[in-house]
Length: 195
Image (tube, rainbow, N blue to C red):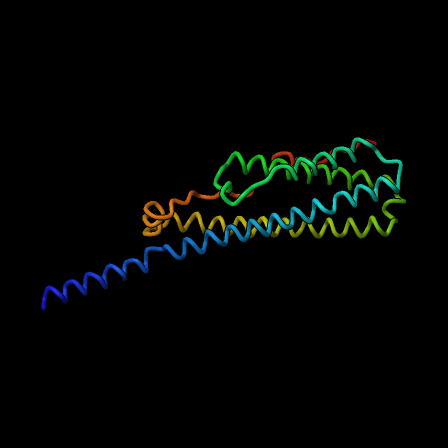
């Protein structure tokens, strides 16, 4: 009888320790990172979809600098060609390539919008103003999505390093820390516009 009580007690202790191992919370945090990444990709896609309309509107409204428009079109094409999957979020080089492509698009769009200041007829065009407002709203959404993604990454990275979750992760899940979305070095420089 005493042996049976010890076996039941050991079994209860074992299952009690599993509830505190963090398996479920790590899985939940991993899914939160994937969701946040999906939200960020959605906003980046929205920006990519707006760019051709913006370029066409500007192109049709003025005798515009070809190199600026070409830079925007090329940056959009490059940003669209660099893809990331949730499995790649732990790869620093893949994240750097993705961020660099997105930063180049942001930079070229900034140059486009600054250069447009020279053309009052473009600024007065209702279509352009609508597209510019949509693009500004999208850029704000992208900034919020980046912050939410980085918050989810912080939570996941902490949860896989925290004891006893770290043991659960190393034994069962083997998740690697995810990379943060960082500002691209090129985006820190102000766009140069020559008149």
